[in-house]
Length: 312
Ligand code: CDT
Image 1: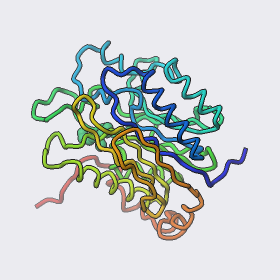
Image 2 (image 1 turned 60 degrees about the vertical axis):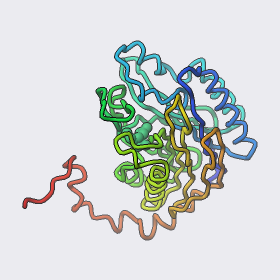
Image 3 (image 1 turned 90 degrees about the horizontal axis):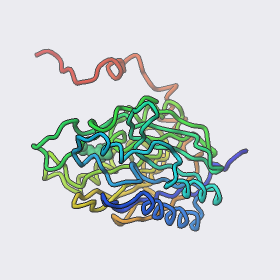
Image 4 (image 1 turned 120 degrees about the vertical axis):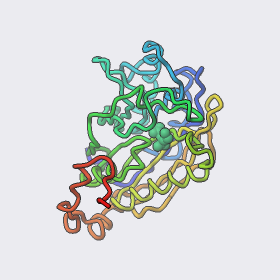
């Protein structure tokens, strides 16, 4: 089936989810936003990272059974099935993030992409895991993604679905140009990502909300421009049990310009009309990779991890 290359996209920002909130209560909020997105004509809805629970990596846990309680063993599962069913009825594709526990006992920070016919067509597992693995009392609060997840093992795939070339990444990945470029090298036309970003840097209290929103915009706008792709970055925002997260969800065009931006830190749906053919100009001119890239000079990008300054 040929699907349109022009469609309305919805960024479905979530307000806070408290530790005590159930999956069922959260899915009811996702469903309300899905209905709103559909009512406004959207045919693709993007929900944030770890969209079913509070941002649990801020809590230090030693009991693996307690940790595993934040993870989903199946997708869809009973709490999320209503979202899959309703989206299929409405003909709306969607993506959201969740903590994935595989049958082999592996833990990933994952997002899935579901097409307008209700099929799961893509899965991405977060590669750049920020934070630390052990309790760190030098920080104002914990960020234990390196404790609870292992780095993703799928790379940065791009899927041909819903009329275009679709990619995903998750939160901290958006700060890494490598993530965008690997998708750019597959011709990506829309990058969908969710985030949970604390409003204050736990290691530098003077880096607050304004700087954090700036870094979010800077990363997404640069990634879109430099790869001539649309991008949508969707927050889980607001105060989760005393821990504030930034809002600032964005839809960005292939020229790097913001076309829609959230105004609140609550559940909020923003929509924009997407023309995937708007990527063509950048991809065939200044960012025509086949003509202009010089990979013979990029060896350090893949051969080295940390910075290696020249000898004195
Ligand atoms: N969820 C996530 O990846 N958050 C990070 C916080 C960085 S500070 C440890 C982010 O890049 O927004």
